[in-house]
Image (cartoon, rainbow, N blue to C red):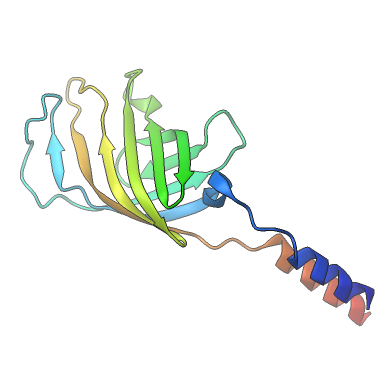
Length: 159
């Protein structure tokens, strides 16, 4: 009986609130609809290729995580906020060689999905092209510590 009481207690833990709800791994697709140079002059013509995008949001360092974009730069998440359903993410690209190499995502969260617009906003250096367009990312399920604990308790009870 004591095992059931422990399980009930574990599942009664209150849900997380705030930006912590975003922590974890997210993956999806960025579909740029605009390419432009620093003076906001159109570069090339659509359609532009989509790219896989991945985020790891956390609070383990002075940053809030990392971003990778297929075939492009990777960066650090320097700001992350959740206000109701509104999500704001700021990304810094250290590999760009420009101390102001930033991008932003302004989106809306609906459950485990965030949809919004991803805009690179750094000043254009020589040969650097900005991208802008919709992004959709979905949270990648992670094994819950509670599920692991429940499994351990059930195995222990059978012995």
